[in-house]
Image (cartoon, rainbow, N blue to C red; front, side):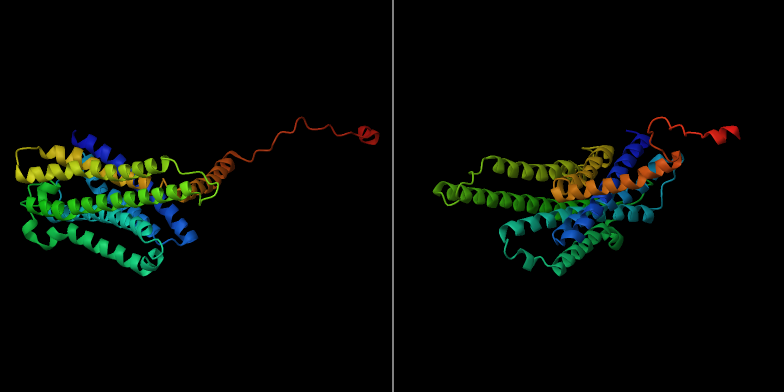
Amino acid sequence: MDGFVFGVVLSVLASLIIATNTLVAVALFRLIQKNGCTGLYFVLNLAVADSLVGVTITGLVTDELSAHRHPPPKMVCILRMAFIISPSAASILTMIMVTFDRYLAIKRPFQYFRIMSGLVVGACIMGLWLAACFIGFLPVIVQGFQQSYEGKCTFFGVFQPTYMLIVFCIGFFPALFIFIYLYCDILKIASLHVQHIRKVAQVGLSGNSPSPHNTSDMKAVRTVAILIGCFVLSWSPFFIASIVKTMCQKCLPYDVIERYLWLLGLCNSLLNPLIYAYWQKEVRLQIYQLCLCVKRKVFPLFHMERGPRVPSRGPAPIRAISHPQLQE
């Protein structure tokens, strides 16, 4: 994949990431104003972080699409990579917070609203952004993580392999284990709830209500599998290949990691709004209402440009003329 094709693919992906997450963020903001659910702030923060991922990679798009491009200075490239890493880390950390929020809602349903107050949610969001910015701008603070710059503005072109290894081992893999553990525990709790409902139905305490079927279990398993699978399939190849590259410089070419596998990881920012928001009926309803509102505002403008249309009601009636008028 040459530079121009990579720039086109990256520009299309960035546009989709920004547009999709912005639409979901607006829908979530309207839903929060309507319901006041504090847990949706984490999903809103996820959409904002993923939108910033799309915004920050536009600098790379302009470099790739430029016909006579010159490599940026070293500090500019380091800052550019730092601004790309920070929202990506914030997106991963927010996914953990969304998972923990749902875990707490199922594990402690009666204490959930007392624990997850607005102040706690705000502190969590602020803390994860501080942690994400610290991870992203660590090479700016610690110059030992910077590498001799040869004019190639990429992750491995400006950062030492030790920094990349620290980010992977401290940031990604613990987040992955926490993510899998929480959702597996959610699945376990949901299975226990289903078993309890079945026992109650068998005893006859539930009246004439139908006993639950296996579809509830399958839906829970499918949801957990998709949530974990999309995250793992998107980022694991990039992180694993990067660790192999830091240990064996000649094992994998840089273009495979920094173009193909990195693009696969960026696709997670496009999948996140589909997974966490589109499957919620309330969010889908808000998006539908937004589309209807845009349709009402846009289509009248086209009608005004074409001119007002008078509905046809058949031929106009002939007005009767009196005899004196004919003499005139």
